[in-house]
Length: 327
Ligand code: RIB
Ligand code: CA
Image (cartoon, rainbow, N blue to C red; front, top):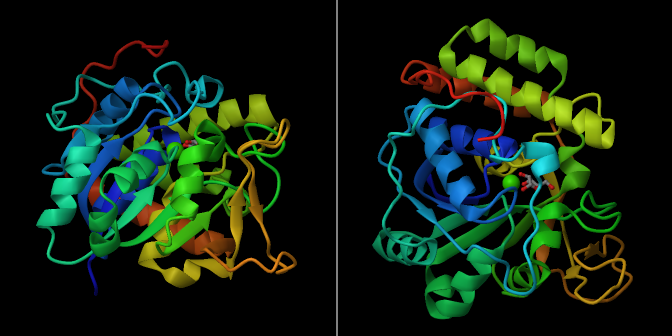
């Protein structure tokens, strides 16, 4: 089995948490580092949440660094309506034992790419601020040492932050434009895919049946996320967007992709942050990305359940849970 070296850039975030678990658990992935970005919550909170997830899942030896606190342009946005004040509301977490790396995210990205013997896959599951900043700061290193970028963001259809824009792109459209214009091998897995694979009740039942502290924590995460997704969007079950990126790396056939031109709207009054995907080739523009169009949902959930089972035997239950209220 090939080991795909991965750096996960994320904004945990309930679904980011499952991307961390899947990347750490599956033997096809070599999780080299985690970088946190402002998105679902402040970067201080997303970095803390990444540490919390790694602590409870027994994920050790993976450096976690905090990235940029604001988008390249304008003010940041958060998603407390879906993820809570902490960015990972629901379960009670004790103090993380996994430390924060003293380096900032851009430095950790640079040093990890330089140190690894082969080019690395970047998996951004939050706003693309860190990735864009890295590409701007180290263009030669990016060209030589990044194999591909498989990101969760955008949509071939409607958005979720605005009717036109998906949250990760809406949070930093200029950063997304830099990534899609980079000439790198970019794969976009958007809402049009993630909404095809909601965490239906049988997923929670299967997780519950594992009967471990980690599986119970995952049920709490999905239960909270399901409640907010129902309240905000009226969804019967929450889509788990971010781990679809990792699942696609593990099994490329799990998410069907087509090559297409993707343009990021930067100036539209009502459409800023939209990913304009020319699936029919009507613009004549060259394709600059592989775009997800469909997903094998049962295969995806099998991967998630297996990942939680794999990590469960080395997970440490959260110590004396903090109160559930916003922390
Ligand atoms: O729109 C969904 C995306 O925005 C996910 O990555 C979620 O974690 C939030 O970051
Ligand atoms: Ca995310």
